[in-house]
Length: 192
Image (tube, rainbow, N blue to C red):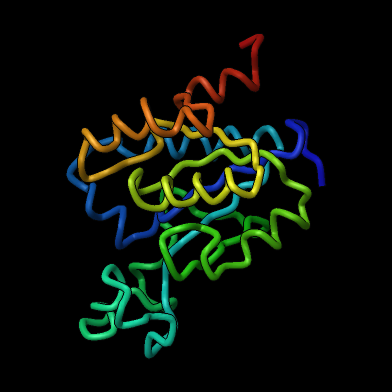
């Protein structure tokens, strides 16, 4: 399914209540994400939301997994909980898939690759929380799968601003085009 911008899709990753709330004190922090989603919709670019969540009882969590194993004891982050739902400011439309992943990369344990193949997508626009988590892991895996990749640098957040800077300025450009949300929007409407 080709859209007017070729075979491109916007991946909005981990913009879920429990993760967005960590940045709640920063006013207007979600504006670049909202701008990217709106531009994608206006330009017939599929928007695919990705979240991290687990089944009741955490059968996906291995005790050796340092990042996720603690959830099995402390609870939270199951597929039905409010914290794993997409943030209301970016509410998915009925035709926009919500992919559930079980690890850091958007591809890990999810049906993302099947969706992308079915839509004949070959170019991914990445945005998400966090830059050093889902964005980095998804970018690396997408590059290994031969996708063309763009990263919207101001529509990526990380708890460590220096890590965000190093990734977006030094690491990501080796495998992706890095631009702001405004630059991406303007590239679709050059006469604007």
